[in-house]
Length: 120
Image (cartoon, rainbow, N blue to C red; front, side, top):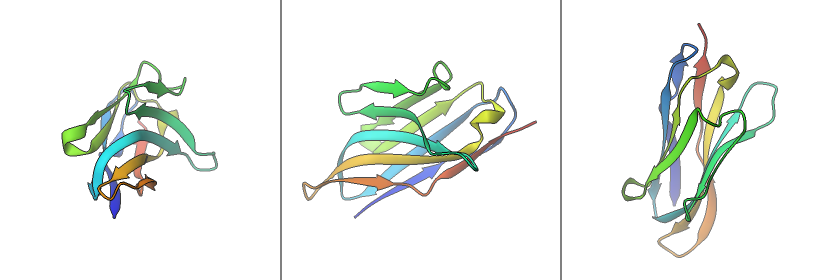
């Protein structure tokens, strides 16, 4: 089994920074695709950033230049560094990953989400 657990969310003032972490544990051989989504109340889930096994990175236009996605393969952890946060960044941030397990099965997994609130 595989679990994704996010951490690092919290309350921050506009202009502040946070770093989210997504730890993949269990029968993980490799993380093929890692993505951060966010969902604000009353809004659809939005893809914020993605990183694949070829290190191809994509960002939503709304976060370009402010967010950076990265990973530490040795720790099976994906990060989202968020800077210059704005009130409109307030949302639950969810980690999604396509993982190759040690049983040679590729499946999609979701974390439980971490709340990010940007307010003065």
